[in-house]
Length: 228
Image 1 (cartoon, one colour):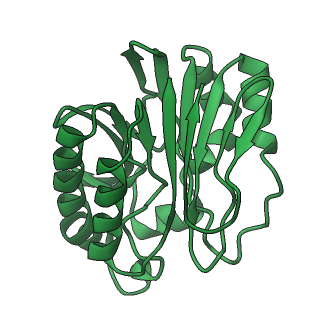
Image 2 (cartoon, one colour; image 1 turned 45 degrees about the vertical axis):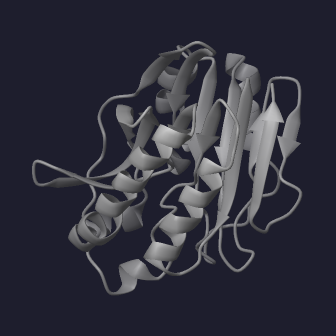
């Protein structure tokens, strides 16, 4: 099983972010390709825009891009996360694509205060996807800090994808991968953590197994591809 983690730099422009993701996905050969949380949204977007703006201006073109990319990429695309609108509510959602179709999605449950203030709603259900490589679960960023959510996901899956952002300068600096390592060892799963980067702020992406940690070489943009 080959996994590709795109530790993606924020280009501070919606179209440039979307195009960068498309280019990287379509030239990569892997069974899974994972993007970071909020990967197409410029880091300062929330200062002048609403979640409705994010849905219309960012998410809709991103979904179309990921659909097209998944017709060229032969594996599963774990689409980081974007703002999703559904029945008048907004969610931080990870869409999973295969062969031009959305085959699953997961809505972040453990929202941070900023997300609540912006008008996002909490998801309710965890997600598990049966694949030829085993069962795949998804957590989004702060979900990994909630033991109940982690247990629900990690207990019933073999691989847990964890798109994160952590690009706010005020966020406490994280050294290493203590949470991912604990999850991997406690539940005997592989955690695939994919980080976003802006101006070298962020954390290193990593694949964490119960026995080992394989991490990105730097805090800059990087495509990490591993055979597991």
